[in-house]
Image (cartoon, rainbow, N blue to C red):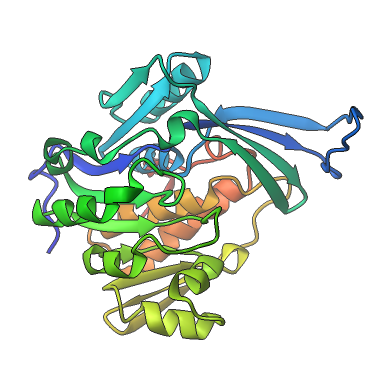
Length: 312
């Protein structure tokens, strides 16, 4: 049984992969070297980072969220803090570090696909020493995301999970993509501490070491109490103690870039799960959140609020 809302000051604590997203979009976004200048049709500049986008969506859905992170003493860092605060996220544990540049990811968005270039900076500046027992114990749930990008946490990330469980938190994990495509870092051992695993289809195959999706799912569902697999425009499905649930989704509206859709999906699912709603309802909320963001530009402007979702 998960803790009641009154037991802890926060519902969720999350480690912020703090960066901004510069999203350049065009029908043909491929750059040309040789000092060739190319005109694009549009751009967006806003807070990025999977965990930061997740935190903003979770707070908008009514959860009390504490984000631990570092930003540079620059305009991008201030943009991140202001954006989180306006969404309702507690940013008192976001450290402004003058020795850092705030991270940035440049997205080259074309039709329904995109390429990404990232300068980490503050994104991977957190270390295990920052994730104190006091911070962990302040929440009833830890959501861990951007596993392979938050390299400052990686050497001791399993220890952090172990401490969180010892302190009574439930734990969810969305590893996101591994840029090195090694898919290791003790992942299988870490599953002993995971309550909810939230990969997409491709990540599920890589994380399981299986070459096809059915084998990947069969393996992972035996490792964690609750497995949720995202299928983009096809919706999502979940397994909880041998029971399967499936949720279809209407196609996203045209013109969206897909940035942050999976992160808002995670927040929607956990908003339902932490409220003890039925599994099917949790999936429905998650797909609503993911579709809304996938239909817009950037990861934030189309996020839903609690009042948008009847089940909450």
